[in-house]
Amino acid sequence: MDEPLFDGFAVEQLIQGFRAPVLPQCMPDQAIIEAADRNVRRWTSHVTGTLEPGSDAHRREVCRMFQETFSPYRPSVLDWPQLAPDALARIVSLPIWDIAVQTEGRARLRIAAYAATLSEPDVRDALALNAWEENRHKEVLSRMVAAYGIPLASEAPYVYPRDPEWAYLVTGYSECIDSFFAFGLFEVARSSGLFPSELVETFEPVMQEECRHILLFANWAAWHRAKLSWWRRMRFELKVAGVWAFLIWERMGLARTLDAEGNERKQDNNFTVNGTQSLSSVQIGVRELMTLCLAENERRFSGYDRRLLRPRTVPTLVGFALRFVGAWKNK
Image (spheres, rainbow, N blue to C red):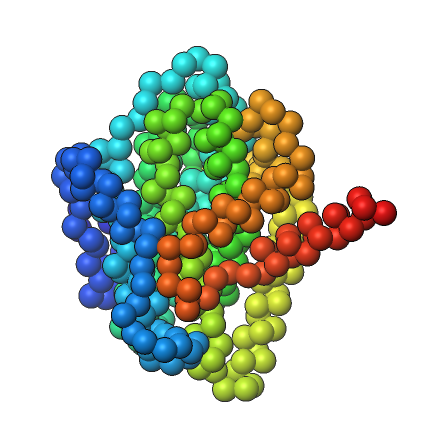
């Protein structure tokens, strides 16, 4: 396996039979890059009719979507552009790099751990690929901070989850929250011109992969719910409610983690919500940012089969909040 799922973890034992995708050994030519970029953004099932959550067709097509939209970029051949001093200073000063790298590290283990509990081969393989891609995100971030001399705290050992399903739910719903706002922030960074377009384009595959990840999660959750008996469904919904309560509590303050030496580190868990001014020289209001997040969320999902479910909780809450704010301002 050229790029293992985890450094330091026996992933082959966690996900039996899974093989990492074959990645190019050198930078592919522009035609291949453009074809891969189109492929990762657009997918339509050839199955006719509805894709009812809980059905074999729904499960099969969701897994096919995830496998067939895989992007073959390799972190080791990404071209990191040289940055002007002011742009480099802005990148280095962003308070996100430690928590970003560690979040990807936790996600790769949690998703792989849950994948190892599944009996359906196609679902297990789709989640295994998801975990593999989380590891690739971690490598992209690690190579970027190395290229630009960004200091990172030493990583504490990642702990295998006692409840893999809980861990996957925490990761999945957390990504649904963060990705919604990250889509808008990424567009702010692109349109503001404060960051070189080459750097923005280098990170574009990672952003679209996050869209695929939460699309897979939303459809897995719907499929999983539909397969449960009524009493297992009640227990599952209680667990989901607990996950949301935990995520709300987590985002009410600073993240407190320990590095490998046992030193406490405090970081902002809500940069995707309140980090706009770090990415633009123009003052952006909350309403404008939320509208942009909704538009970018719709744009990134627009190429996938409309019969696949989209994450709706955060977009629905934001849409409701925008209507409420609009009604209040009109009084």
